[in-house]
Amino acid sequence: MAGAPARPETAMPPTAAPHTEAVQRALAQVSDRGHAADLLYLEAWEINPVPGAAAARRVAQLRRANPALADAIRRELGRRRA
Image 1 (tube, helix red, strand yellow):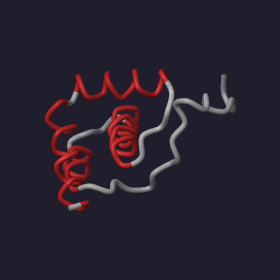
Image 2 (cartoon, helix red, strand yellow):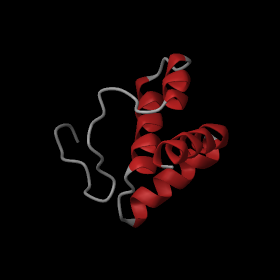
Image 3 (tube, helix red, strand yellow):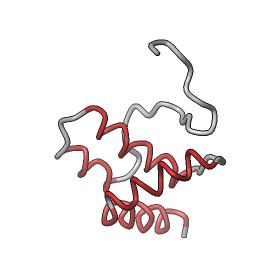
Image 4 (cartoon, helix red, strand yellow):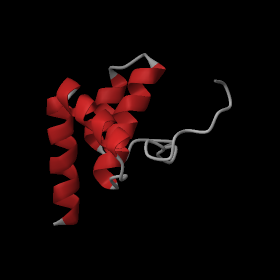
């Protein structure tokens, strides 16, 4: 339904630009808006996980579909936090 608010357990703040170089590189190869939104969602989750089963399922699916990217995001964020 157009204009309906996102379910709270899967809602993430909109991201104007990626925060990691890994996602920047991945987005350069993506032409589909939905795929780009998924990659930004995965990155946002790795930065600040959202509680809820639906959000966790979505991230698990994204990690399975993009294992190398998920690992690269976590490694990059880990280096920043260290």
